[in-house]
Length: 134
Picture 1 (cartoon, rainbow, N blue to C red):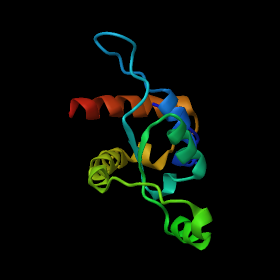
Picture 2 (cartoon, one colour):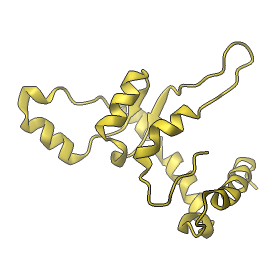
Picture 3 (cartoon, helix red, strand yellow):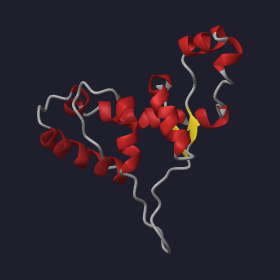
C-alpha cells in the first residue's frame, strides 16, 4: 500500500507502486512484476508508457482523445498507436467496483486525515476487511 499526499495524481505514483510488488512463490524468487497493468485514460503519460515498456509489462490503457489527434496530426512521424486488449479492459469494472467500496468509508474517500500515518491507520484495516469480505 503506497500512501501519498491527497493532491497527488495516481499516474505519478505508478512506478513507485509497481516497485513495491512482492509476491512470494512456493519455489524460487518472489514475483516482482505484474503480467499487465490496467488503468484509465488519465494514467497515460508518456513516462508511464515508457516505464512499462522498459519493464516488459503489458499495458491495458486506452489513449486519450487529444493524444490520438496529436499522433494523427504528426502523420507518419506520429508512430503507430499503442495496442489495447479490449477484452482485458472490459474487466476493469472489477477494479472500479473495489474502489467504490473504499468510497463507502467516507473518512478514506474524503481524505480528512492530514498525516499519511493517520490515513494509513484507517486504510490498512479497511483493506483487510475488504479482503476478508466482512
